[in-house]
Length: 448
Figure 1: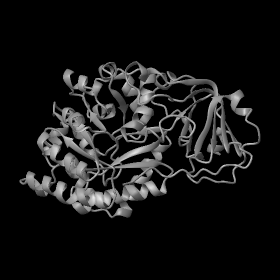
Figure 2 (figure 1 turned 90 degrees about the vertical axis):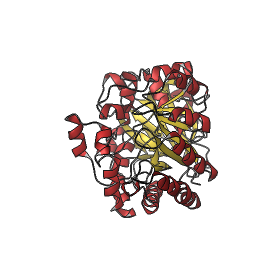
Figure 3 (figure 1 turned 180 degrees about the vertical axis):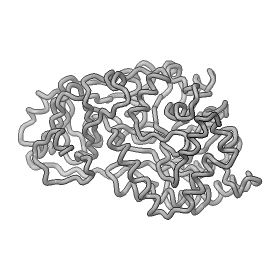
């Protein structure tokens, strides 16, 4: 099974950090008990006039500038936040980044009035992307996805969940998961792989639903597990996709092979996916515009994260968003994700997702920030490594050119991220980290 990259901590002889990020108006640590539920989701645990010390790839201290700067010695790098906000690297717990082609033509048809389900029934939708993806080699899939990940990375996302689901054959699904593995190995980011062979019924199985479910359960899942290509098994439980009974069989087959369940649930209609996810102990149930009162109560008592995907609702030109306010009030673990994919959420910006989470799902700004950090890390099983700024955790940080969290929403449509630090290393927009940079560095260096 894939596991987080091992820490590469090299302790300095003088005991002093390798990096200090200082002069922040606020350090949003998101530290403490996690994941956040209920009223606790509005607590960011901020440090005013703060700083973060890093040794190797790990955080060694978080506190006031005065305390951190008195640690003694000379750091290798002193990074001036210039009064901005420092926060944990964001986690996107639901993406489909590896695929071929695009579906811009479908977007135009939706603008003209066609529904997502109508396009799917007409041979478009997921099947159109499957057709394009199956023509590509692993190397081509890696190349096409690389730019997307870089764009999302410099919008502040340092850890991604990455799903398959556009192969819908044994060879096709393995190719996508292999591409995810290669992208994870080459990039500064961390990718958490999820198998989604049950994304849709492929064209060649249109008249044999049972045969395709057999293929997923008896061929795909055992091979994915044997090759250690995924940590999670997901299914699109929805009208026109897979029934509750089919979804249960697929997820239980995944569990039997060590793959933790996730569910695409209640996106376009009341599908029963949320109840199924809770029943099977899923790590997360995602989408949720059509959850009912009973399901909201179930999620409030469940360990499953409720992952909201408001950019999907927006991009599909729909007006029924997931009830984020009610889910938080019920005590659910609420996270936000982009659902980046070529058909129903073609965005690369977690900033837009945060905005929609506040403006359309009813979250407060602080709840939304916890939803893309500590709760999102929980939704992909990385809560012990990332999602908060605490000593011992991986040093994934972003620096924003705002002085209060609320400015992220007030100045909407703007990428406020000016610096990204992954595993203790500043990654600049030229994408070629250089160890010979000056010891003291300001934001202007990133754009020279």
